[in-house]
Figure (spheres, one colour):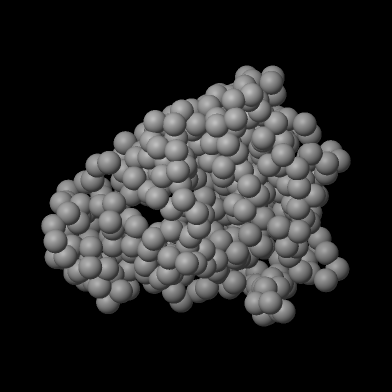
Length: 412
């Protein structure tokens, strides 16, 4: 019998199964809404050119008395349609492009060293071919918060620095992760440790982190320094959590989600919080930024874990089934355990026996583990939308809403 945490996840995913993200963007936590609110917002999408999704919110959002009040003081109801005459959510990549154009050049300036080999090591992943999801979210969040706070939409210097720092911390963690995992491929090319060796890769990761720390100190805000320092601690704790497992089924899933937050979502959540601190003193605004980043970050990783089973190596830019080969039980495997209890023993021995990886792969594909993990990712995206919709309407806020759909539908 599933434990309490499993029942909660099953309830979330069952809700998502019957009510898609598009139908629940405005219909938040319907069970908690009082009976006086008989009519809730509804949303619809239509497919556009290039398989892009046009997201139309056709009526107002009602938040129940159990939820926090809207922070846009002139509205009792949040209407995303009011933000734009065509009611289409803006493309996040297009809106953030101008701010991200010089991102990698700025990072390379921070990493400038006279020693040529160290420079090549540090610049290796800053080639402009990454997704740059984290700095894009930070840039859009900063602009949305600036508009919400009655400021000009332009980025503050400190906010621009946070976007850059977020990508530097992320890349340093990738370099270190590849050493720990013994990976030889990342983003479709050889890893730093495979090209230069583990020792130099570790030093390169350390150097990138040190440069990020110096850039963080120059922002000159102690609270921001504290918030982003938490990211480093979470990354280390998350890596240690990944090295272990839980025998109890309920604890195992909680362990997995907490590890997912620390290794992936903490950076996004705390970076969003950092840019909010630089423009607004209201703790509730800080929490909105943090919660959006947290929920999108967890959803992003859940989808990543699904892609490890559903996408080929060419799409991912790294070997498929990589997590199983590393002994890691991710969402699809943990959900599959409900239908195939044989997986429990494999999880505890970290898929180390002959044939474990292949058998676990087949069990996951025969189960609804992939589907349930996707539904759980939808649930986190719904919460992200609920949070960001509390800000004043702006193109950037709407782009952050649109981003949740991109997170859920990506294939690499």
